[in-house]
Image 1: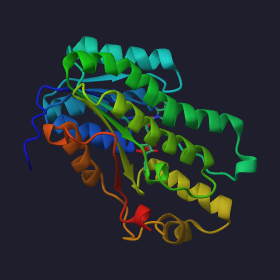
Image 2: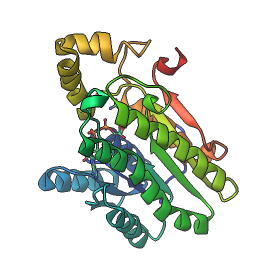
Image 3: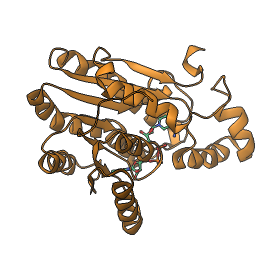
Image 4: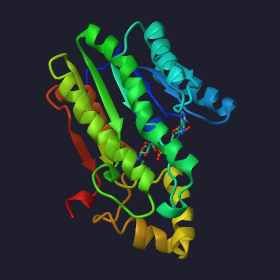
Length: 264
Ligand code: NAD
């Protein structure tokens, strides 16, 4: 493994109590990065995970329960990390939810929640982090988008709209910050088997009227030419590259890690 030179840096990872965010937080902690975790879940489990990560890696690990639908809480989360660590080097906007339904039946409140959590929260966190990173003369903003930031699937109108929005937002922020030492990029994974995908298997089965095992083969991995779920270490590899000095010239990009999906 290369030395990414991240020891002593500080990161905020939204939605890091589960799935990809949790795995990316662990990858950063293993490189010596102090962390502020965020996300929902059972408070005892969150505290046990936080304490275990701190004990295993020796970095400082904080938790902030900001709800990604609430701008003031998001600003407070970023300010808390900056106050506690005295710096903020990495912001990983990862929190996200999904809902699968035909557009004519799509519940208004689900649309609003997906746009708020998957798109607007990245704006609010970035807005709070940019002044800190600019003052430092260095920073890394990484947005966990999706292959659905570049191409669409049926029944996912809100998610696809939000993720396309994240890719556009990433480009705009990158251009604004191009001469500041702060980069902004999007990672666009194909399917990663996390709790979010497990839930989609059930939802898709209902929407399409087919059994769950056929959803995996014919629907979910149908889009992924290599027929394999993306693994966490494969995402950690691109994340660590982007946040290290090796990633200094990468900005405004959407990195596909999707087994060939968006090449089709
Ligand atoms: P997950 O459900 O395992 O984790 C989502 C995280 O977001 C959890 O920690 C949850 O508590 C948090 N969260 C949800 N609503 C929140 C809110 N209002 N405020 C604060 N935190 C909130 O999902 P995942 O699969 O790990 O997804 C993580 C990100 O990766 C999402 O943005 C998702 O769209 C994206 N993504 C996932 C896949 C996949 O196949 N799993 C593929 C491409 C992109």
